[in-house]
Length: 241
Image 1 (cartoon, one colour):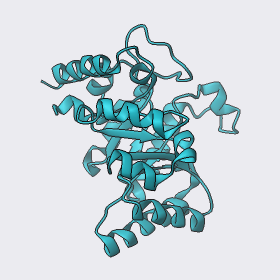
Image 2 (cartoon, rainbow, N blue to C red):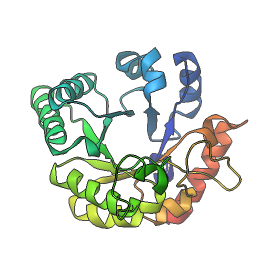
Image 3 (cartoon, helix red, strand yellow):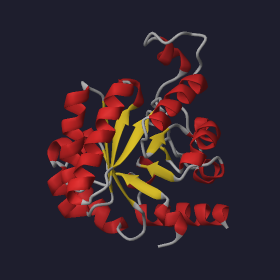
Image 4 (tube, rainbow, N blue to C red):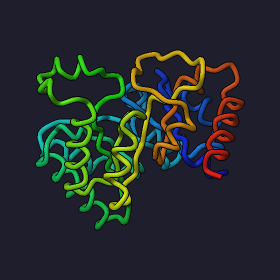
């Protein structure tokens, strides 16, 4: 697998394990792993997912709850050998610290290191929608991403998720910590947006500092998914050369 392939995680946004498995079998060995969100997790769960896809899973549950509840959830995910788990940075410092401590406890007991990935601002949100949640209108999305990224750094998370538009800022802030910067909202020229509002093309996202690209519909809804993956990999490899 080339470096470009390693940089891609395919979002398996399916409503059945059978459909997701069919796509994973087609792409296994061509991409770095698979992202599993709420929909597939609800119908399968980590044990079945690990058995079917292997350990290179980003379990994208965007966890936000009481620190005790989050710690228990993190321990459960870590014991299932999931590679990465997402949490909402706006859950607060105490929640993130509880998650970090829980992951370290399981690492000490089992040797498995679960990577905790903090989600900053959802790539589906616009400034207007952010303001509707009660955020000060003088605080733009860039400012909010900066504050939440700093919180992720201070609580020793392993990486963050941000939209392609905030990548330069996020990369600059996390570079010294060697944190992963993961970005969704990747679209090729002509792709439909389908819910994502702050998007970029694969090569642009890599140039702006993304370590991992999460790509769903442009691949999984394509007539020939493997062909699309090969095109995107070639684009990334050319950018990295």
